[in-house]
Amino acid sequence: MTFDVLVSGLNVIDLLVTLPEQYTQGNKHEVDNIIIQGGAPAGNGACGMATLGLSTAFLGYLGENAQSNIARNELKRCGVDTSLMLSEPSMVPATALVQVDAKSGERTVFYTTNGYRALSKADIDPLWLDNTKLLYVDGYDVDGNIALLELAKLKGIPSVIDMEAGNLTQLKTMLKLGSHVILPLEAAQFISKEQDPENCLRTLSKLTDALLIVTDGANGSWGLQQGEIHYQPCFEVAVVDTTGCGDAYHAAYAYSLLQGDALPERMIFASAFAAIVATYFGGRTYFPSPSDVKSFIKNY
Image 1: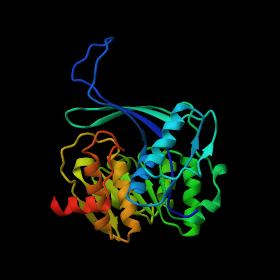
Image 2: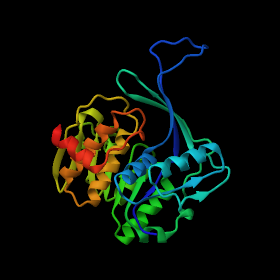
Image 3: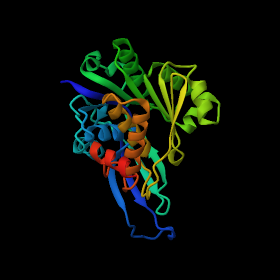
């Protein structure tokens, strides 16, 4: 089977809750919002791309437990193909408790990877890369994702990397292998030892031939291509929840890339898509269609 995008990375279940401003420890409290969804950069990215219309397959492990059932069903709900996923009965997806601030929409994440099994180099079938137009990975299932990036580079398949945090040596390895690398400012600062987004980009560009983008939430995003910096301001919206906003940006960027759009158009589309996602509670609650995004940009 042929796919537009092959996705690999951390497989997570999110429990999202909005806490009251005041509560008494040890008591029971009713809250306005509690939902359970799939989460994590790769998972949310896969769901965003699938709902935008890209045929998208997810790689990784699922077990025989309630969490795995939720993870599988959440991917399928968004139209993501799970036929390539591997089975390990005792494997449990990572689990995250996401506390969303009712006033600002800012999220704080507490997570565990107890019982989680990451995709390894030995798990990878090289034929997977013969049937996709784009590889999309995060910075978590590192060994497997580095092996996939090496294969993609060998086969001339473009890749998008969503890189948040991790071991510096491994991050630099992924940076060298990727075609398009998108980093939050904090990660760019960690790798480059610079502070300003533009300086981060120029320093990172000495380590890779990849097209680089640095994102910084409400402050916008910066892209570097052929020595030129492109800046995209954030679209101001009534933010409900920032969970998955970065993931949404990456998903929309990948979609726009496969449409043949130039870098500025990709960044505009990605920023608008992420802004719309931020107006809903939960990172997978609502993904706008391409026409919705274009209408939002036109009418903004």
